[in-house]
Image (tube, rainbow, N blue to C red):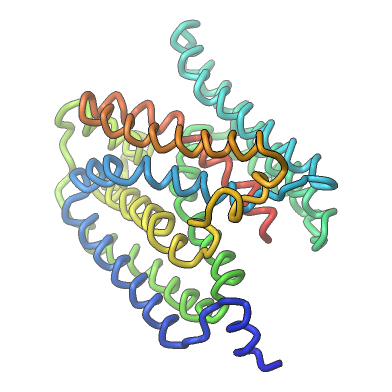
Length: 339
């Protein structure tokens, strides 16, 4: 059968113009984002987190539910390892600053605690890689262990800087997940999408050029201080704090755009009903009810987050970025299963 007819019979797009429109949309959003991030870094950081943080987590959770198989079978060890790591690491991450405060740890004690968390994260990811490498399609990921050991040495050498690198790398995971979803659902869009990604390093260089001589952002209240610290201004004092905030908010804005615009546009299953779009719900009536209640509860959580932002934005932002480690960790096993 003709490849174009096969795609059409599968319900996939066969119109080349649609891939061009998709790429143009990505490029337009990217250029607008980098310009706004350069001009209004603090203001854009506040607005984007307020508007998009909760909804993008809701879409991510719904997407992951569409990718979970109905029965785990031989994948049970993989998914149990994934779930244990997600919730174990998340609880430890939330507990670390609380324990540090209660125990009145010194800076050395805090660094040891953070190094242990970073090491546990690396061990978990390497474990998932090794388990995944023995599942079809099999991969030769034998280099995961030595690479993990090298990363662990960095995690102990400067734990705070290692943790900051995760802040900047996390938004890029969305591009990878989108690429895999395009390959699966809209393969004719892949080439145009990958060519559009070449613009990303150019836009980062544009941001560097735009802000290389810009005045430093002044600490003006606790909220600005939190935003600066989250972008690593205290760890990288030799780099313009305006550039750091702008770079971070630019990447975050693209991350939100991927989850709220691009993936819903590409994925055919995202907006299907619980029965048809989520294989796990087909196991039993109890599972269908549980997933339905979970989706309703997550929708309510988005509304409550908006209310919390309105009541006390600074505190709500701190809590959100602490608890949001769950969705950051959840992306790892789903990404590994897809490749």
